Amino acid sequence: MTHPHNSADVLERKEQILAPLDPERYTALMRLVAAPQHRIVASFGGGSVPGLCGNLAFGKILEELGIDAHVDEVWGTSAGAAIGGPWASGTPIDRVYESVASLNRKGSVDVPWARLAIALLLKPFGHKLPNGLIRGEYFARAIDNALTAKTFEDCPRPFRCIACTDDGRCMRKVFRRGPLLSAIFQSMSIPGIVIPRQHDGEETGFYDGGLVEKTPLISPIAEHNRRHPDKKLILIGTHFGNDPRPSAASGFLMRFLVSINALENLAWEYQIREVRETPNVDLLILNPRIDDPALFDFSRVERNYLRAREVLSDTLQNAKLALAFGVR
Image 1 (tube, rainbow, N blue to C red):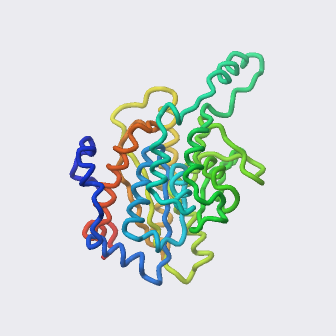
Image 2: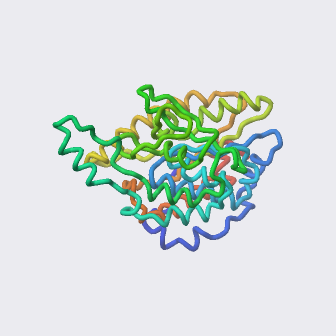
Image 3: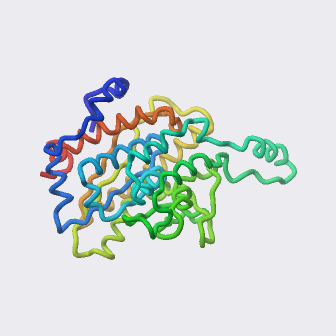
């Protein structure tokens, strides 16, 4: 679904976009989430820095319309875990936004150049290359500052975080307990790019959960069917899919990320086909259409957030919701 406005002039419409939402325009959505026979799961999908911005806008709309009070469980993958985790821990989205916006490209991408150079020089002599290029310490600190609760067990809303095992099998891992920060960091550790960290009590390391479940879908549905078979699941989530690139990616990092994204999209297409026919489940999957090639540029957080808020607030209005999802 496209939006009539061009995202290029989104900053000029900032005041209009940030104006309070009119609840009368969202009565269909409110009836859906407030129905006592429904169980509501918010699913935050992955998508690099644009995904962070889209998830911030998604969480803000849920708060503003009072939908957050009806959310029974929160799931997140990669960038979705970085926003969904703090939100589930009890932190208002505005504060999570401040933590994300406090970063810039230089501060968030911390490459240990000296260590990397030494490893490359010594490679012919059998020295191993590092497991990643980016430490991610500044980003981890920003996320930690946004966490009100520090463990899964202390979250006021149950939170689940998806990662992929780094043991050669690439299996799905759902974190449900233990420290939040390390699980979130594992979920968004791009293999070969972000240096992985060990999670307490685990025998293997983990990396980006987007490789197995870019938007939590199969896992929350399976858990719901096991634990709440008597209720209908309403899964409201974000999925960040870009339009086809007008030209080939250039540079090692962009080529690598485009390849990873293609694999993630193949997995997503399979998963969405599998769950469309699942009984007793309704999906509201939202794409804020942030077509920004600058995947790690934190200087564009405000612009991308505004774009996402504009698209999502439009998509969720009564008429659009009925047209796109059959909700009345």
